[in-house]
Image (cartoon, rainbow, N blue to C red; front, side, top):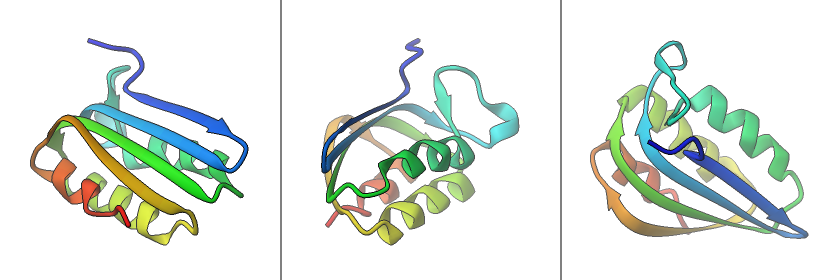
Length: 100
């Protein structure tokens, strides 16, 4: 399993997020999993970007965490572009719908 489940890159006004792996509650999180709290901590670093690309390859996971991630992306002022790199199953498909 990858230790780069949630990879972020910021280049000026462009941001990129890779969501690879399962979405889980914070108390269950391992290196290859992501929670809404962890996602928020990373998304906060994208203050001021105008466009965020979200690449997804995830089997899904916790509905509660996924809905929170979806809402964070929808609320962000940047344009959100979503790419499905492999799989966006279950709650990951809802996260994918946060794209503009």
